[in-house]
Image 1 (cartoon, rainbow, N blue to C red):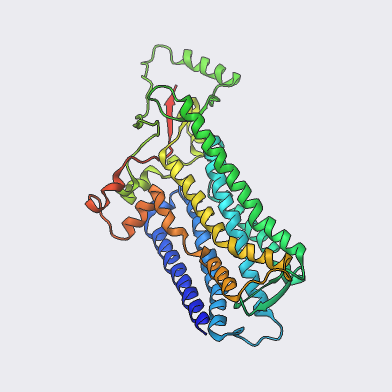
Image 2 (image 1 turned 90 degrees about the vertical axis):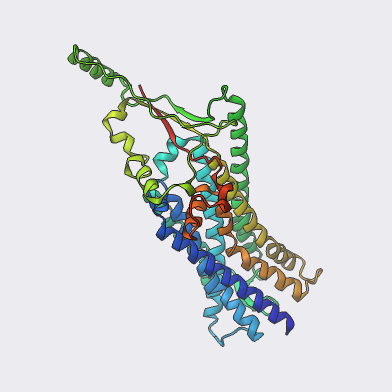
Length: 405
């Protein structure tokens, strides 16, 4: 009985944290305009999607386990086993879609570090919306395997929840391990290591006190043969007119390590960020502007780029770490059912740890300058407060250094 009480309290705490953290993030997104600008909204959509998945997991997976732990048995009498299958579906769906979303977030950082020009062409709201739609359909189909017989579902008293009986379907266990854990973990680790190697290479290639240049787009628009003929024509057409001195945009400061720095998002208002990140700074607008036909793009690395990369890596690390005890227990229980006996206390401990995978993401968002500033402003922290002087350090927001030729 004491074990049931402890499990109930722990699972209740997990549900409470999930609801508080994710509702707070929704409030931050609604109140802070900087998270809804064309430049910020793609990543904000992915983070809101993660918050929605966490809430669904808390209400349709963790809550069922809490009620069963409190009752000491499956909390409803359902001969058709429909509610049991629903809990398993929600558990599988939220697990796999979170793993794949974390993989997508790391790929976004990978693409920005290696090819920022392609990042600007690909990562915008419509693409993210289509990606999420495809992700829901794909992962929903995989999670629904138990609905049509691929895998047996049963209620396990020692877990106080319904789960897949992998002893009856070892192939389902192998498929689940590959799609939910091994492939996402391998891809995330590979991209993270590649990013670190790339940053180390950029530091070695840095010239003097200059910035860390990610990419210099030498394919200047207007450099084709037809455009050069047109430029030659315009050159003679405007002969005798007053020449205009080329303009160079204001250069951004670079710290001692070569990271491009800018004012901290915490110290700027939402209105300022909305103007700076408005439609004129979207990734596709430079194609439509006449004056940009002769522009060369130079993309530099900022410190915030690395912070967000580390943030996604840490979130993925903690997420998979929460699931590993349950996964290891499932493997041992499936392959060594008659050789190794696992106590009910250990089993329930692995279950409780896995339920906490939905409630830890928001504290890591403070590693991002933009998210940290938005959350602190929502909490009522004003500029100039000495309590937050540490936040006023040099930040790094990746922006283009554009030079008109």
